[in-house]
Length: 433
Image (cartoon, rainbow, N blue to C red; front, side, top):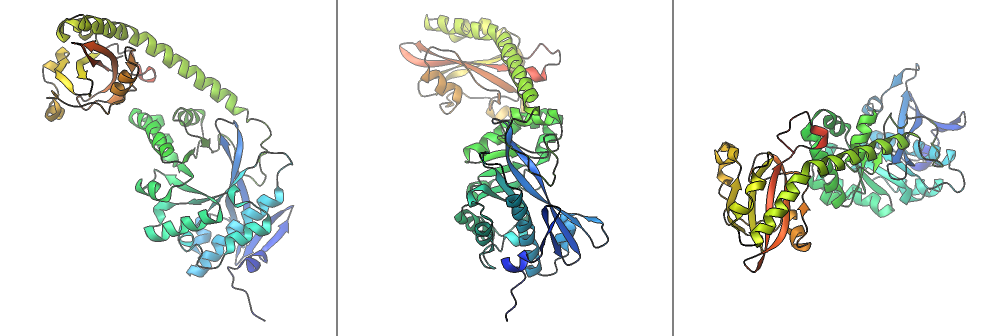
């Protein structure tokens, strides 16, 4: 009679034992339990999945970390066995606890030990056999991989494709920690990217990190991935994730890991206060921006009218350039090519810009790729307001106002840059919008 390999499904099933209405796994000197942490959708305000987390105890009842458990493996085969046992335990408990009839489906997030993940498919078809036995649809399983821990790109890509062919979703875990490789986002095409907690905590302390975070989330969205902010512990962190347009969220603020699943029947009560705070913040920002920008938008529209009537750009934009936060004014032709030099405020005319001196002379530069130019040409005659950005012609965050005009019988775009300070950054300084 042949003995099944320890990493085979039937052998691993023999290590599971029912205990208090759940399953636990006994392996060597360890007793392994499943806990589940809920994952929520900001938009739906309810749980949409759970991450399976290992809880382990030693022979004398001492709690052990998952790292300690996996570090006990002395061979590749032992590591694969432990990795599979952990995922089997979570999947068995997830299916055993089950959901109520009529409940929306939930994802089961399963972590993969990186070294074992890299050998996916090399030790038989354990994973699809496990899902079929438990009646779990592959499309409801999200396999998490810590991509920074796998240096071999070929093995990483092969493993990702193995689980994708089964039908599972792929999530990259702890993105932004250590040496995360952005190029792997393009190659692996994950369905979900989990932002490392450090990205959110940094944004609570750093204005620069707070400004960059929405752009990073947008980049991941454009790559075709949902974005999950993990490790959220406070309302401030939750609001930052919400403002950055993260799709999903998990952390102690929303729910602690536990042996039970959270039902998806009703919205989590914490989301009501979050959305109220978010909407109030957005309304304050809109009102602030309108108040601060009104004199600049009015002045640039008057400059556009005067320019169309035949005045020089110096004459037409003089009132705009006299406003405290105005930086520069410039004119573009219908191809986005700059006509003449920038008109600068007094500070910039004095040449206090040595770091960006090679970019000072911009006569003839082409700005057709800029959003403010494209929008002004698309909505000709209507004033456009860009998002804050770092101008290549300057050293500060700015906002560009732009408007399409007829000048000397041809279409042009008149632009004005303003030094920008958003509503969340106001500290009594009235010299910046």
